Image 1 (cartoon, helix red, strand yellow):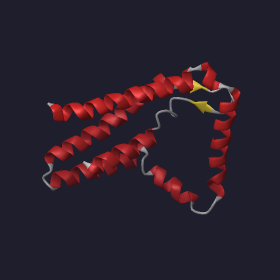
Image 2 (cartoon, rainbow, N blue to C red):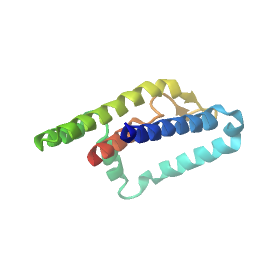
Image 3 (cartoon, one colour):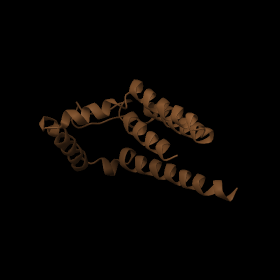
Image 4 (cartoon, rainbow, N blue to C red):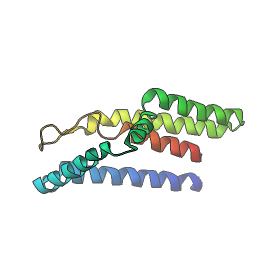
Length: 146
């Protein structure tokens, strides 16, 4: 039982820390100052300005690998490879991690969506946080480790 307790404690601690950061940054008026919002927008626009550089289409192609359809193929292939290698426990765990991460993300998106006040065209809607693409990448990485 002690072996399971440590990872579970770590997971709970990470979830609490994520909730604390979310509340501190999104729900605390003092941290939503105009200066922080301007800085956030400047960073976002800086990254958006990089799209004209050579090689950026490669990044876009890589991101598309984690759209729902291609991700299903990637994750399914990983689970099938584990099954073919007769690593049934790892296959089940990898499947559970990837499915659980995706379901959790889709559940949290509408709960955490917020409207930003500056500028009007910046919106953190249900598609913004937590990022489905980031969740897919990290869950696949964890499944590969498993």
